[in-house]
Image (tube, rainbow, N blue to C red; front, side, top):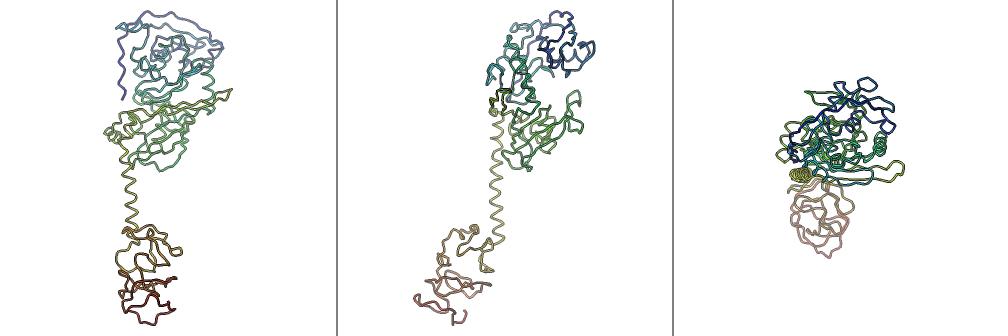
Length: 452
């Protein structure tokens, strides 16, 4: 479990002046909230959104929401904003995140080239500031790499760990966003859902409405008028009736998409305190699960233009691997239960228990030639014993004897077996109960002796 990052008390500086900004061709196409956060680098994200909600930011003299995409030639009014003066403990400069957050984020970088950074994002850290956190991944990276133009390619929930892509220039960001819109980026997650998933590989195509709020928090729901959302669930490992480990591919990337679709399918994510099952989550805490079990395992795509493949993956974090280890005995118990049930069914349907056999054949399966094709009996006899000439090797019979009577130790006891048939091959050894017969005497077509 990731320990929360403590942030020092902030000292506020003077306000900036009002500014009118004309959008250039290079700036066009991005969302207004992202544009403002790059301009007000030292201002928390929550403050930026407050400026938009209050209408202090105007585009062409009109109010706009956070999702508005600025166009070339737009006139943007940038309001006066109070700038942060630094950390009270003297460890940071103006608007600078805490040193511990910077070290955590820089230590999470698992790949970088001239186009992108890839982080194995820790759980508990937001990708950007807001929702009670002044700073997130992108603010920390911008503070530690002030000469770079860094932008989020996509987002992950605060509790979700794993692969997070950061573009290192505007051209790369635009190309990758177009790739996502066209379905060319493949993102695979590992999720632990409740119950035993019996739907096989399941494609869930259920539109999501992301604008609903409950108690001031975003609450996504399935709605016919929502945005197109597709998730493909594939079971990987079963843990009895308790849980199933899933691979989830998301061609679309809506807010809370996997969490809502899993709940919609009747198998909510374990540890999810918003869309999950309260009682199951309480039970999973006994196995060490303290957060939503969702991990961005890998990202793959082909670079636009060149077609060069790109693939990066992040292993399951230690705290989630420990949960898998804790519930693995339940998987083994489920596997052991299946053979016991099979054996019980065999015993009830045709296992030998000392009584007469009906039809001259074991009910567990047909004979082909002289060999049984059924599974071995619980007492150890059956298909594993070799037979010669149609006879059981461990129980020799006299020459010419029929299989119509039940036997004990190779001699006839007088009991009859119904529907028996004479075996096709000669038998040696053994004696009939009504008198000895020479083993060298040739077999006769029909015995003249009376039945015992």
